[in-house]
Image (cartoon, rainbow, N blue to C red; front, side):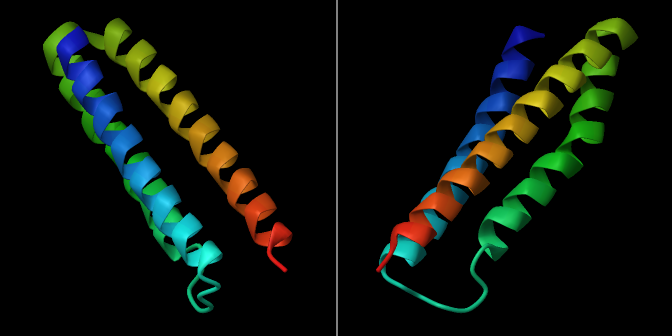
Length: 96
């Protein structure tokens, strides 16, 4: 079960970090147009993975373990997503 959670959380962390760095690169190069779309879609994909990951965890370990795992993963994804948005907003406001 720990292996599944590490793979799931690692994949979500990779998706969110790649999207954050793509947005940061666009901010640094002053690219206008569809800014934020990449990080938004990464957040949506991460949120949509919660029911699927929860169902797999339920199958592998039971309802109680799946509920805890899904809630922890959802809280972590929400925290990282919010932090990335705040950081990107600060970076965009610092551009001359």
